[in-house]
Amino acid sequence: MTTFYDVPADLLNAALAEKLSEVDAISRPQWADFVKTGVHRERPPTQENWWEMRCAALLRKIGREGPIGVNSLAQAYGGKKDKGSNPHAPAMASRHVIRTALQQLSDAGLVEMKETKTVQSVDGDQKLYAGRTITSAGHKLLDEVAHSVRGAAEEAYPGLSKY
Image (cartoon, rainbow, N blue to C red):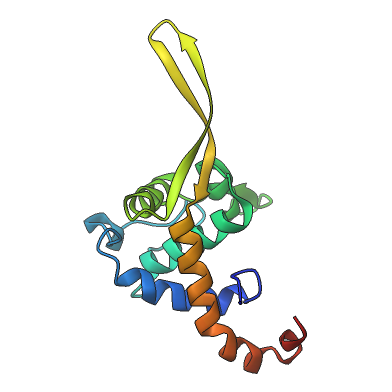
């Protein structure tokens, strides 16, 4: 069986975005047409399905690197901020976009928060989380999409058939 580790991200994310567009819990918010994806960008995305593509990319990245937090994801999707005549500086992506997409993925049952321990504080017991991990339903969805894309991946990347 083909897993999502075996298929390149460019083919997997496009097919996964189509699959996620059929899920009711994942929908583009109203503000998504006007928002930039980070401070390093000048304009909002022009791609029609950019929200589904970002959700697909987040799901794949959480599957590969989870448990992972919003800050680490924002650093991964960030870029270089142009500071004029000064050297470029690293910039983070929008954490609000990432957090909202993760909330939609968790409402769909594809992602969950991993609890590490409970700490007592003045306000009562507080739960500490290590980040978000993929659920078995999310893993199954990723593997199904990877299996359906495997033929196109072997055509695009001939050396992939060895694996």
